[in-house]
Image (cartoon, rainbow, N blue to C red; front, side):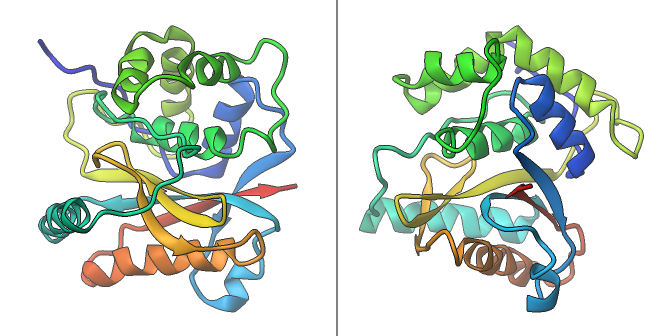
Length: 230
């Protein structure tokens, strides 16, 4: 069977904020650009920040690292709190939407959902599911797919054709219970990057983003956006 395939989203706050609005989330929290990794540029990001989405290129170097990381964690183990909401990605190019779901799902106590929010319903329905079941549920969940499609056409650049191979990928970084987790639906499990706090979360998340950049120093296609209280 052909895998499900969606149009890719841009790492553009206008697009992601419109998407969240259409999914029934009150705009108390909005995505903003992170213009750079230096302290003075990070100081421009409104606080508090509850999630960071990183868009990065999938390169050979990254894939080698991903395999090594998975083997290392499987051998050594890691602590992952049961309250972390994680889902797998089975739909091509849906990583932007899955990043948004990871960001909102792990901060749902902070969000104000509209009464008939399609994302609130998706999260309530899928809370007791496994990461694989959540992925399958998203495949059939029309309200989010339709919103994703319209958002993919909203960006500043022309949306690529649905069959075009896209080598850019979104992940979400979140703070759950004082630990910083990387949530990537292409990975078998969340990655625990150590302790964090509400106050230091943005700086800690950016340190993780820097590691992605350091692994591929020739690459320039990195983009981070932060979910901030406004």
